[in-house]
Image (cartoon, rainbow, N blue to C red; front, side):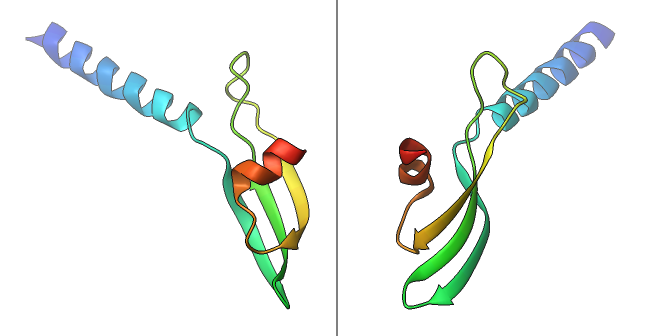
Length: 74
């Protein structure tokens, strides 16, 4: 019985860690400056070799930009 509980707990822990490291690019900060102009900070998705390291990109431009297009241009 104890083996099943510990195996279940390990499975939940592993799934939660995997979910955290597999997150896509996301906007951390967004400030509108008027006339469809924004300042955004975009956190990149992790490097497969080092999943705990992420980069934050400062972006100044159109508010219509998606996080993935900002990262692709960087």
